[in-house]
Amino acid sequence: MSIPDDVAAHIADAPLSAHLATSVDDRPHVAPVWYVYEGGDAYRAASDAETVRDDRLWVLTGGKKLENVRRNPRVAVSIERADESGVDWAVQLLGTARESDDDARIAAVEAAMTEIYRDGTASDGGEDADPPGEWALLGIRVGTATVQRYDE
Image (tube, rainbow, N blue to C red):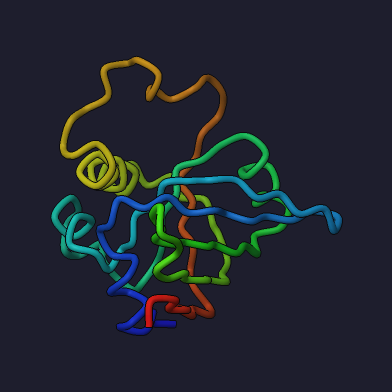
């Protein structure tokens, strides 16, 4: 599925966190994640034009989220923009997550995350450094995408 333009306009290249929901044995698990939207400019700049094939969200993750996706690849992602006055909008995505071991894609996603979330600066190894444990790149192919606006 191609993500609708109105949804893509909200999630592309914004330094927003998302919540990734996974579920195994009817036990949901929701946790915050950083993401890169493949249709976004930061990802295109960090990747070879040949690698951009279709709209997709990319997440570097580990722990319970990764364990759950390996058992059940169906996920939900919620992204919103909010400030002290309330929520402006929320995007809900339903899709299927798959692990990628493509080193070039991993490097492109890491570079795009640095550009989006760290304002182009690399981690100094401090509190933002990757925690110990297994991490993997998940590509989320979106099946359903909706946006709810609260500021209208």
